[in-house]
Image (tube, rainbow, N blue to C red):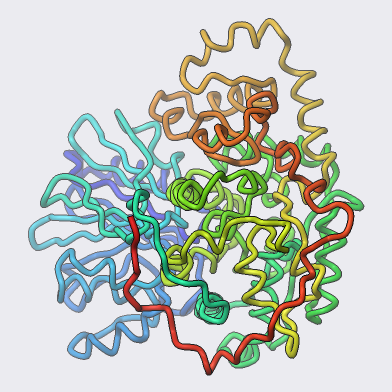
Length: 586
């Protein structure tokens, strides 16, 4: 991921202001260490820190249209850029960058082109003919983005909070699926799929091979790269499926022709952790070149301050999971790898967290998945983007592909409901879709491995060690005054208090603390889902182990997941679900 910074409509066009923008842009250079660019037009400044993945030779930014009257700074990837170029035959492209289409689409369609982009992105576009500008963020918020306002009425845009928090009177998270236009002076939602209305319950029947095809499409389009890449492989269902599909399709890609068809996989954990064991088993099965990175609890504790500075949150779940990912990203980058595929997002769209076992009916199951997807940019997307970008590594997230989400979220949620007595554990519809007897994607016991949250899977002693360390550094008297010191999102545990102290030191502004979510949670649930089980209110912890009566014990004895299933038809025999209308029942 690159880093973008823009100051728009500023009253100061001096050299001193330009130097200040450059100084702030340097704070984002960890995201894009390959090249820096800046464009100034009067009081408008567009800066870019580039991580070169596609067209590293000529794709430096900012990017322009033919006469350089339209200027764009972009963070992201446009997977359908070659198709879009074919529809822009009267335009001349300056680079081979996938993002080069944006300025030309604007010339053709004005501000109404964002939904045409298949990818993840944050961009700022300046039209110098009238000094108007627009800003947009991808549908789910895979890329990070913030917006702020200066006292001189300037608008500030930054990939990370550290690029603007000292210079804005107020700033906030730029909402995913929205654009901001200077012409209208406000936000406009460009992404509005049927599932955004939580009261409408979909009723499309489950077709396993349609889900399989949609996900394979989501993975293969993300193999677009001109530099070495790999996969994050924890040995859980989600990352294992990403790795399996990548291994199957890698040979035919441009990247394979340049860098070879041997897939590299990466895993991190404490010595003897569940993820290390499962990750190696899957790697051996797939034949990847596997890299294991070990860390100690003390390594993680020592990194927490850096993690909070880079990830820009005090959320307990996010920090727990970001720390091992942060450490692993540094190791991966040292091997010369610049991009990885990762498995975030599956638990939100399929209802894969263990607390979904307690969903009382399909309506509440579906509504919780909707809430979880809408909040992803505050949690897992934030972690995956910033923990990797801290070292100039890009994470791509196939489960959050727009078309794949539309396919899965159009399913009747009854098919996603967890029913162990029928052999249906969490994410059964995904497991079933890839349960291929003739050409297995994964070993059966991996395909049906119980959900482990990343912060648990790297080793249970990681979270226990964090709790012990923070308990030594936060005393009971400090906790008794927590509500007075931190009236917003008051920390309820010593661990949360410890993270909050560090965050406030880096980002003391009230706007900063308002960017972080809060509320009751158990095993990563929303506050609403805590109501599903009265026992959970006494065990409020985001770890998957907090799902009392579900974690591990839900499958003890004779496991019912290895049920006898009828063979699936071949993919070629299946009609496509993608692109069809969504059937809705109220």
